[in-house]
Length: 172
Image (cartoon, rainbow, N blue to C red; front, side, top):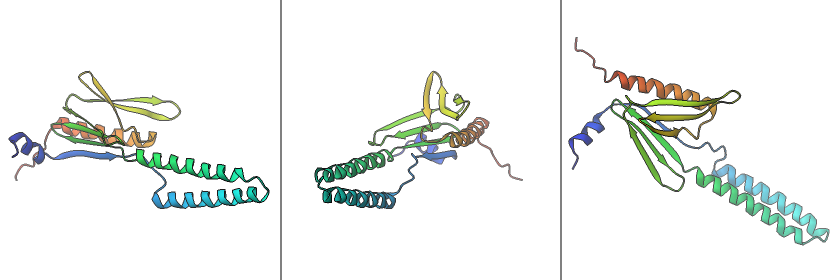
């Protein structure tokens, strides 16, 4: 059974919505291709050492392949993290899901939220923060400096629209 507040929130228009995820340039097919190539090169090199009589080296080449496989798997696990940010006229909601599935959620009144950033002279925007009534959380950690600048601009526009309130179209 839903309460009046839940129905009101569901019917409210979303001004801004973003799903931020870590960038991964290698998909599963690329991962398999890299691992097959690395395995073939390691096996061929290990075989060359085996022919020359240095048979223990073959095992170390297999160990290298295993370490690279483990590093890629750890990287893919961390790619499950995400950050969801949405703005309506009555709330700004940040929902962060870690790569382990742990969820943290913050809700702010968009009238009281201030967006702050740390800028590096050489690299651009380093960090974005939401600040409201003494609380500060870092957002958009997955994005690069240029993406953070674009995200900042969009979020500022959304917060300004939320501060203006709902717009009504008068009937002519």
